[in-house]
Length: 280
Figure 1: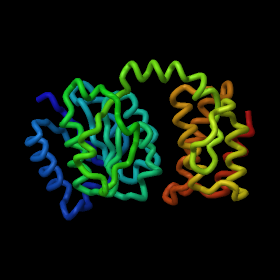
Figure 2: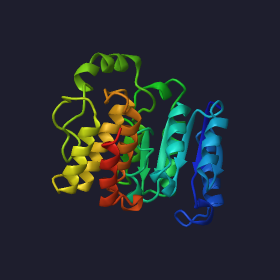
Figure 3: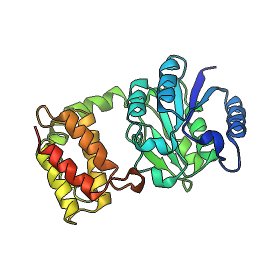
Figure 4: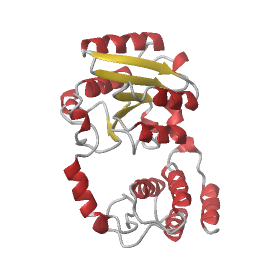
């Protein structure tokens, strides 16, 4: 079969039900659906992040795409995040609990999220991936990485959008505009948009944003949105303070989770982070 899809179930799905289905029943449903789509599945469930990472590596030549439901692991799965980027093929994330969607570390690197749809989220992901030929899997994604698709969105609308990496022409345009759009940190304020960049991403800028959050000038959600935008820019090669790129990446990852209660990032943690950024 041309469509070979890897399905990874995260922690605790082996002893919980999804839409009334135990995991083995859900897997049978997915296999039946895949067969009707002329797709081949390999399904792995693990309560350990390392197993999921090893599976992505072991199946990297076999699989054309992957569906991952990391459950609560999505909030701190740094190794899995790196593995998804190295996998280099379309990956769709299934998020069972809508409260975990925004805080998922995988959101910036997956093609799409299906949020709060249970078993149907898995089926939607399979339809999206199995419906693409080897050629269309390499075309641009209409939505960009990590766009959450909730139950209100119609399947026909979802299916009409393409997956994969940006086409070469788009990359050329992006490179041509890099000096204009990625010359430094954006002054994004609460929503992460706003004025064009006027400076590189620096420790001082991050400390100021944390100070604005602690003083109430920026909401927790606003800080997290800003941090996600800056983290994505750093990942794409935006200018960052010399010798501090790794520290800035770590700090921004912490901040993008700061509005997620399950992450447990409290004000005292933000104060400690400011102190760390003030160091060498």
